[in-house]
Length: 242
Image (cartoon, rainbow, N blue to C red; front, side):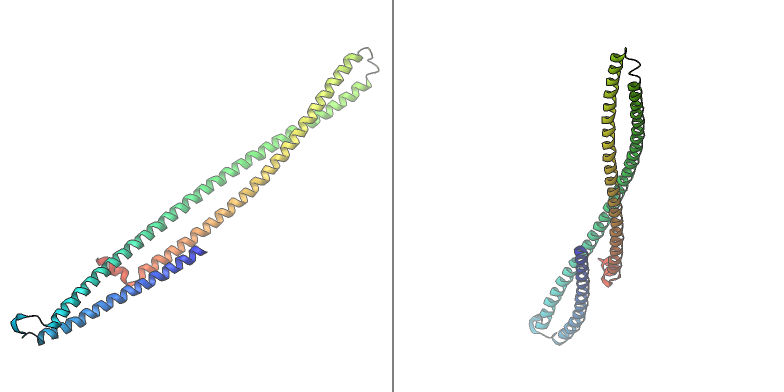
């Protein structure tokens, strides 16, 4: 907002400078015509000065013409400086436009990369969920086996030691599967949190791109208005003769 106000102030300042330059040029032209007429009259009146001396009015006219010539040189330098300033501003606008376009392309590439990462994470989550279901089924199967072994314990008393060892082993495996299941659940929760974070990042990226697009449109419109305003000034075409 502050930058836009600054640009408006600069634009008003440039308009005032352009008007002042036009008024100065008109004033110089009027002075030339008036001084030319006065100098002609002065020479006609004082051509009979003794000893070939220039009349006072002629000397004053020469000094005045010299001053006006210096003013013309200064005005020409001012106009040339103004042209260079406008050219620099035009180059600056072009550089800003190119930088904005490059930024937009970079943001689009980052956005595509985020989408790919999001798809990869979703696939990983689905794979983990599938593996978790398999582990749950295995745990349920092991539980059934343990119950069956306990029921058969009375019938296989002679193999009690062997069966107890197997049961202990199965219990250990069950505990390990429970731990793995808990770890997988934690991983799934972590991945879900990361997914939510990526969704928020994606939304922020879309908002940033939308804001940049609005800024680009506004800059283009300002540039076109500035160029049209400069082009419509009377001194714009007059500077082509310098």
